[in-house]
Each structure stands twice: as structure tokens, then as C-alpha cells.
Image (tube, rainbow, N blue to C red; front, top):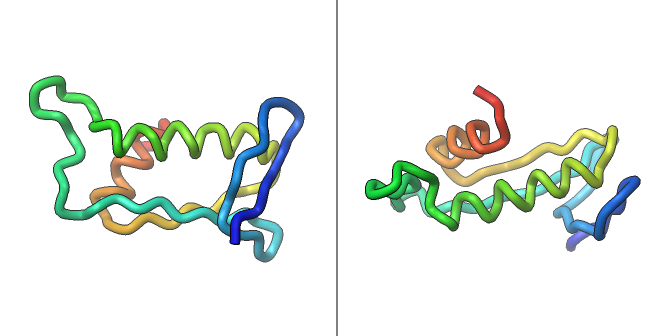
Length: 86
């Protein structure tokens, strides 16, 4: 089930759930795929699209924390890096 959320500004975004005062969303990346384009050194589009979506979700959630679940350790590293976390 998807839960629509709207914060102070911007369009509605969808998340996977809400539990214990936190929004929940899962992001899936194929763990066998290379996530960095060797020609450009940048994340491939299938990585940047979920990160862009997550940034919109955070903006709309305002002060409500969001817990993200990802499919692989490699995806977690990419997600943290793309979201600006070390």
C-alpha cells in the first residue's frame, strides 16, 4: 500500500508505510548491477532516480522521520552518498 504525503509545499509524494511515528519506504537496486558509469564516473540513472524521489519525500515529510530500506549494501552506500551522508 502506498501512503500519499504532502508537506508545506510541493506535490504529493508516495511512501510505503507509516509506523511508530516514522514514514517507511523501500528502494530496490539490483545488487549485481554496476551503479557507477565508468565513462562518466557518475551514478547511473537507475540510482539517481530513487535518490531524486527520496529528496522529494524528505522535503514533503517536513519534520517526520523517514526510514528507508534498500536491497544491498552497495545500494545503501550509493543512497547515503547521493543523499549527502558519508
